[in-house]
Image (cartoon, rainbow, N blue to C red):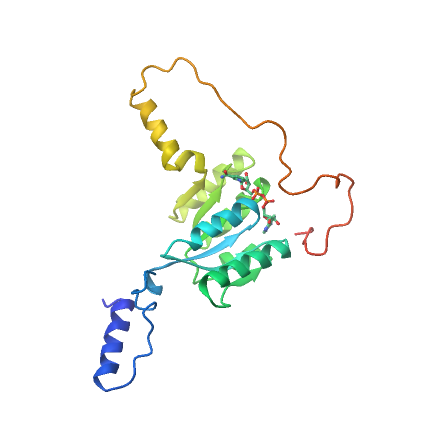
Length: 223
Ligand SMILES: NC(=O)c1ccc[n+]([C@@H]2O[C@H](COP(=O)([O-])OP(=O)(O)OC[C@H]3O[C@@H](n4cnc5c(N)ncnc54)[C@H](O)[C@@H]3O)[C@@H](O)[C@H]2O)c1
């Protein structure tokens, strides 16, 4: 069966044969370093705060990925993420959503990246799997064991691919260190020392906001 790339190539050749100017760009034909649209993984990024936003930036750097949707209950995070996607692709095509269900029900989306708080890992993941999406989901897998089991069962039942985003388990330098240990290259391990950063880092700039107040207008707190 002819694929979309071959179809476009033959269509533009046919157009040339009857002297119609070819208007199909090199990007569409997969000749500009970007995979052809038919060969790209179409993605939605749900939860685009700290880690989810960073993961989205990494997906934007992959030539065979096209991010078409971003979703967040915080309009500030949502708008920043959408602007980043549109700037990267040089268009205004990325759609923004406040409800993840609208993203996972989009037929054109192949996979989703979930960068949500721990207590929101399971329901969107199960909804994504049920809707036939592959999933990159942040660690920890789930907040509760029962949620984790339900997520695994949904991924299995709908034949989806799941990857847990846990970069200290998958980045090449960590992996290399594990393999040195597992293969006995540094001898028998008798002691392990763990170094952790001390204290608390105020990533969210929440210092001084300990007193409860009304939810800010840009946040859909009830959702
Ligand atoms: N892999 C790592 O090294 C690493 C590092 C930091 C965090 N994490 C994990 O990433 C996840 C997110 O952490 P973070 O630090 O990015 O938090 P964050 O608060 O910066 O980001 C979470 C985002 O999700 C949005 N959100 C919350 N509920 C939502 C909902 N129902 N629908 C849509 N959007 C919603 C928030 O508005 C926010 O933008 C956590 O599970 C955390 O454990 C992983």
